[in-house]
Length: 192
Ligand SMILES: [Zn+2]
Ligand SMILES: [Zn+2]
Ligand SMILES: [Zn+2]
Image (cartoon, rainbow, N blue to C red):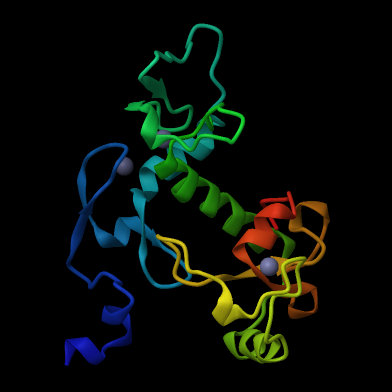
């Protein structure tokens, strides 16, 4: 039964399926996309991801990004997109990468950095840690079940690195704490 298949339940793609890359617009077999840790796929194909990572997405003086009142150019995929496809800060300014690139490229960079710092922990270790924390240990102190689930999130709990990876923290269970998404984003270090 397909519905009992764990891969199907989390929306993972089956072999032989294809998907469209948002950057190059090509329909490619799913094996040309990287899997997220939850089994689903990124929307950016591996060739495009390598290209973005390889160019260092530095835009020279000759390659000025065009921003108009209604549209902006994403500095990573170089698509010209309406403003609503960029996250806007509370100060009114926009992120330089489009929402799709924020999800697809930054998540991958973070994954690569985690691989680089080494260390790993199992799902069992994570669940055990979570069981010892009935509520968020961050400033909000809320019980997990009292935290509203925002749209587009699967869980209110994030795996926070106590010492951020960007500051030399390792990806081991002793350096992990569960933190709600809002306390985590308030920590400031988004690379957590
Ligand atoms: Zn592509
Ligand atoms: Zn983009
Ligand atoms: Zn919290």
